[in-house]
Length: 619
Image (cartoon, rainbow, N blue to C red):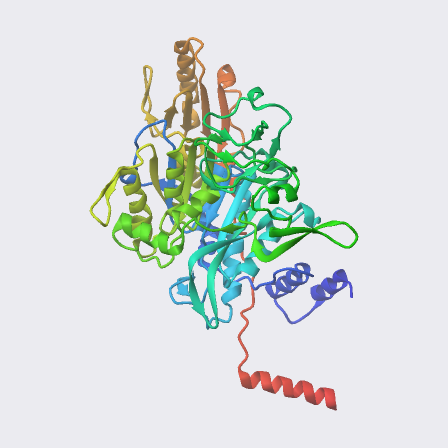
């Protein structure tokens, strides 16, 4: 039977409600031939978004501001579905690196909560709830990634298969060629210590790695920090070493010159360098000895030069030999994986716990915090300047890792999102990173200097009604002021511009160097604002500057004609229309489709049903 015929019959079916009819038609339309299928379980925090729009409100007394030229990191207290929705207005397509550590859904007590109830191993909808929970958040996260963005997700055996399918579908929705998949691979993280599970010892977890667009991976540059087995795009020996401008301090063994390009990705074959490198701004920071013969492209010559050699599948080459036909072959050590895909020597959950205790004097209620070294390694692959996001922030490891990377140069910004269950956000996530910035006395009484070249700003989720009355639109524009500060990365408020004193009831202004952020709440003051801008232009005497002007409008018109005299110096945007447009693709529909509650059958009911089927079959 064709799908269209079945839908027509459902439309004519009597004895069911319109909601039931809509549910059945939707079920037919969305049936998959392959991939994950789960029951969409209603989630309370999603229901809030059917009637409300999320905004972010700064908690001023928690702000840590050390300087205007330092990166502004953001910590958001609230449900991550609400915060991610708000970030679609401020950061859509602008997050370069995501690392997060979601609930593993192990079935253990106090591990994964859904609608204020812990999901345990006895919950028959355990996997459906987890997939429903993750899919909503991953869809928004994907929209936040920049076109050359990377996503890393930690997970263990309980949901790795389901999560892989979920991410494959999300990142390759319109890609039918598996060779062009945006999945970069499943990395193994060696935990350092195993946990007993029956007759086997589990000593690893997984990190699933994805990119928004694999074609753009060649744009990545080598990052800072220690990088073991770093990738080199090209090694050539066409010219003597004296003809090249090598990074200072690099030493070479052998007489042949070698040219190095520190670029990530690309279609050319990657090479491994033995030992460790310390990079800064894509160049060697410390001397490195390259083994003689390493530049030879042949795997056999690499192997004879004493270098560890791996085939294209990541298996270690043990020896080379000629077969009976005289063809060169090699024997590989099965089960040995290329170290690029095994994350070892980057900390463990034990070291993560020790680090947290060293800073706070307690484990903060976290059994398995991620290690700083793991997050530094993963996020450091992107380069020196990027915006990162962790929307399962937990103890706040990601922000600490980003700030430590910045100590070697660069301008990396980090956004953290976590709820405040058991005061986690305030007493652990915030307190940990506050101490990292300001300095602290560790659990052994030693003074640790702070990473003072960082700013941290604390926000909470708030809501405005989705009803599009003029009153609600004006309230949304007012409450969106701090969203705009995040969007433009401008926070220093100016209450006086030249001879003009601003009335915060009608307009507010923020400035950072040559950028002015103006928010106009009442169109009646536009004429005065134009005069203010003209006075700034006059006093600037050719100095470069720009105004970002967000103006309240009941529609889409940003008052371009009224600003005509200064249009070349400003960028105009109508509010709250811009917010509505940003949210429209991620907000749930105002009315939820009615989903029948399916009760589980008892054992007796199942046996009775089976007995009926057997009788029908036999007689």
